Length: 195
Image (cartoon, rainbow, N blue to C red; front, top):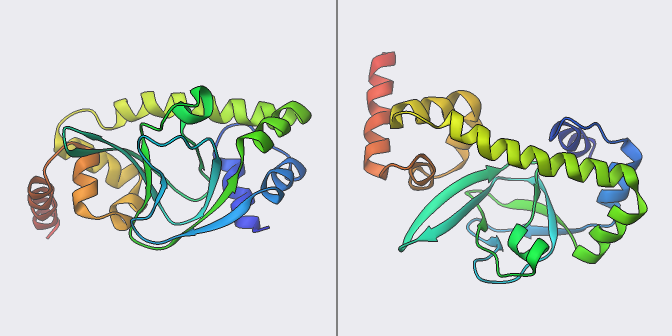
């Protein structure tokens, strides 16, 4: 399995899993290729699978009153699942959709995942750490993208520059909570100040 992916998985949280547990995790997964704009997890459908992103960027969003609200982005090494489906066997709320370029994702069934949790204490500890990291990230995101639209854009530019390059302006505007036109004007204003 790809050593870069193993390293990314080790960096995803603050628990350092052994190479052998990462290999066990990756060895039982199936590879999926996604086209641009193809959905991995769709709204209102039960999807209990667990995914690990190998290549590409996946956008997580929901639809509110016919408007897409981007919640976040998954980059290589990120584990993705629908908490509604996995935990409650309910239809997914967040949609996971591939961005501009093709993506490669690994997939594991819930039953295989649950078996690994029971069989390997280190795996359970690693997954618990990642779950706590997700809770932390939700709170941290509120801190990072607080303030004006300009502050939020500059924060993303500083902390997640790969997102700026990999997603269309419309999606980035959704993530920042502004209109695409406003974002375009903001980018132009900042570029003019750099000159």
